[in-house]
Length: 240
Image 1 (cartoon, rainbow, N blue to C red):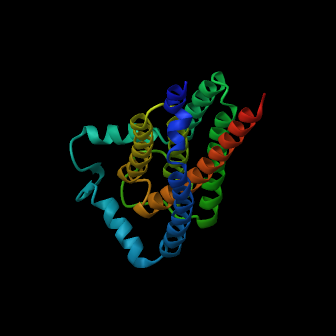
Image 2 (spheres, rainbow, N blue to C red):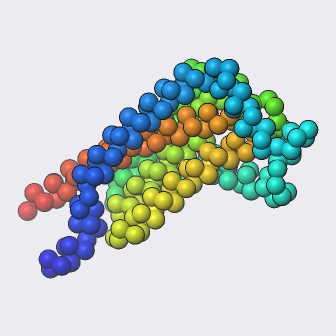
Image 3 (cartoon, one colour):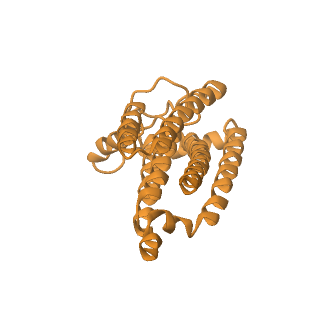
């Protein structure tokens, strides 16, 4: 009986809660500081010039509509960038929330919804505040209509994938599986953000700012989830 309890997911996760809880506030702080720094520098001429050079470096000289590398890179970039679209992230959140509902993990399902809604609100509020123009040096490989700073795809992909990765990590039984879930979530968030630069609709500073805010909000949601789970565990333990 004691051995079975020691192998339970909750027992495995309980071995390192202090380290994880200490990391989340640090992520929030670093994310906010990083965003504040980028927001202060984004209108500076040297930073703007570096942004432009980075965007142009991905295109053939004299042909701003053509990416460097083989022809399939353009299609691959569009496919990857779609993983951060509002439609895809909403569908993913609904599917994941439905699965969590079947497991009666109502707090986790609600957390995913809160993460997505909060990420969307942050995206549109910050875009309206800064109103930075999109890059106009190269041909856009994706349709866009909103302001550029911060990248909504980078922000919301970080929020949804990192929050989902944290939820899955709590439900998976082994440490290797937990780390894999978090690594995949982080990789997807990074790929989506990088793809926005490749398709020519964002500057690097837009993407960095999106990652900073998205990671900070995901960490806030992660902390909330841990508190909810701890409260549920305390209630279950107190029940006769």
